[in-house]
Length: 219
Image (spheres, rainbow, N blue to C red):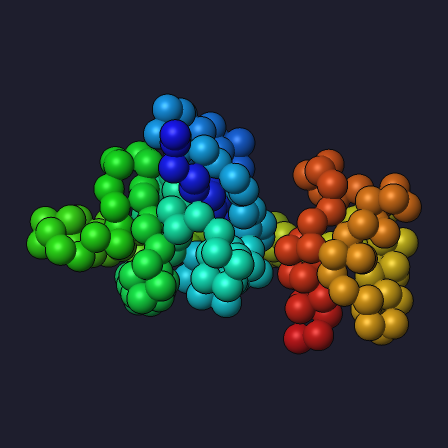
């Protein structure tokens, strides 16, 4: 009988430029799990940076694993899907070890939570360092590109927030109205989908996506 496991996938605006979409990550995890694990759930983190620990899908997953006795094995495509900074990665892995949760990076088959083997621990640290370095290099590259565009055109817009594009104001109004009425993000996500307000990716609304918008509105 195969052991049960869950998948954690994450895509931020920066990572979308790198091509690390949900489909790619889920395919890699499914391929690794075949014959070894039975995947019971997939937690999708959309539009959230890997440099913070307070992520909706991550918190939901940890709650399920700890409180609701869900499978204690988490599969991620690579170490940088868990965290894009060394400090964040170590914090998350520390909490996983504390609660007996095993985290496996399927690209290398490395158990990121195994601190008994000095070599495994060293590899985890090195992966975290390079993920952090890659993140900083990419941010610097994008900053340079924005500056070049600003000098050539006199303006440079970043990613427009939801509600700025054609067809989105109605969906944003629904989010604002239901938030003021104290509806939860899951209820709002369902209402947006049923009302025919599409996400920018064309997928069904998730509570994580709604949560990100509500958080921005409150900031």
